[in-house]
Length: 176
Image 1 (tube, rainbow, N blue to C red):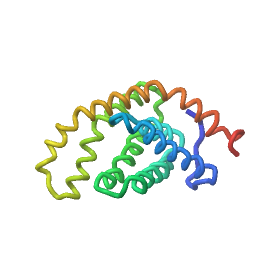
Image 2: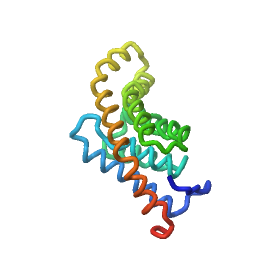
Image 3: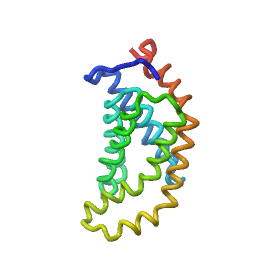
Image 4: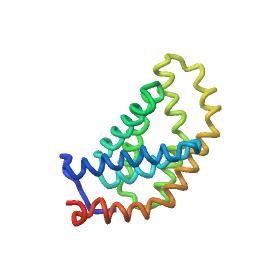
């Protein structure tokens, strides 16, 4: 992890980098969309939060907006308004961690809980909780896929992508 400590203000450079990362998250999700619950959202959000702190919320906001603009603003989208920022909050609590394994465990657990977190939004909007257990149980196979894919992508990509962030994103000699 870089010793980069951004100021409270968002610089033009940070705005550009955070926007590009949001577009990258969206593009990766679209590219992997034929595969059920396999995406790179967690690794990119974890890295963005580790390197940019709370400014990662800008990336999440742009990503969530892109999802709504392309796929429509529906009940699932309302859940995205808290589910993805929640990952930023969780990462901020462990931000000093440098272990790929710990990040992989966090991403895996988050993937396992992603479905139930989404269902909370559904039932808050729809006004009923009777279907929550049925939806949760029906979604367990997808949540397991999400958990395993998050765990493996973070375990194997955290270090290489951290090096990319150090070299090309954080380095002031490359982007100034």
